[in-house]
Amino acid sequence: MTRSLLSPIISPTAITAKLGYDYDLAIVGGGIIGLTLACALKDSGLKVLLIEARVQSAAVAKGQAYAVQLISSRIFQGIGVWDKILPQIATFNQIRLSDSDYPGVVQFHPTDLGTEDLGYVAEHQALLQPLQEFLQECPNVKYLCPAEVVKTEYLPDGVAIDIKIGEEIQTIRSLLLVAADGSRSRIREAAGINTRGWQYWQSCIVAFVKPEKSHNNIAYEKFHASGPFAILPLPGNRCRIVWTAPHAEAKAICALDDEQFLEELRRRYG
Image 1 (cartoon, helix red, strand yellow):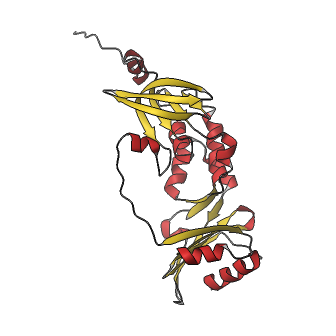
Image 2: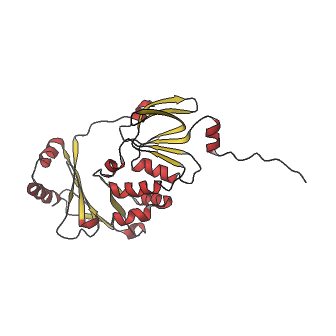
Image 3: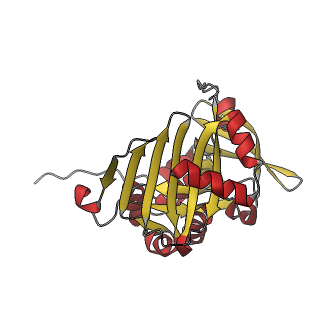
């Protein structure tokens, strides 16, 4: 009989401490993306720091709404927050697509995918609040909010991060830094990661409306030469309007009073 001595398993956190680092992973940006990643790492064995510059009340108050795809719902299910999110959002079980003045309509139903639903529409707070609450159940995650990253210094095997908390600057060291601070990420820019972008000739108008009749959980999208126009269902028989138009036209539409806006809305949808 032969015997061998097995090396003990070393956790990522143990390696982090041995190298003189404070965290395995630091996430800058406590919006939906940053929170989702932090919550998903609950049972990873990693020591995680989440940094958000805005106070929680300001972040939750953001007046945005999103189309949530089925794959995203499965991610939230895997984390364990979907049961808290689902009662606060709208499910759409029919999609109707049309093209400008063409009379034909393309329809999609759950039977086309073999699923119960086609997708969901969620307001910002309906996603953010359950994630913020779940984060409190993640002992491996430290949440700094409000706190602002003012400097990053990349090291051979990690990064040093200067964080402003109130009037004090605190420096922490992490093996990995994740930039979840938006499309104009300062963290990405500081890391020298370039992007390529361009200006569109259109602007997007968004609004909330409440129709006289039930929206029946149907999502509509109509494609015009000037840009797409969508009506997305929300809880409480409300709808989210997403209206794309050339800049000058969009500016004129935003200047309309409520009655004129609704009349233009009827004309555009047909």
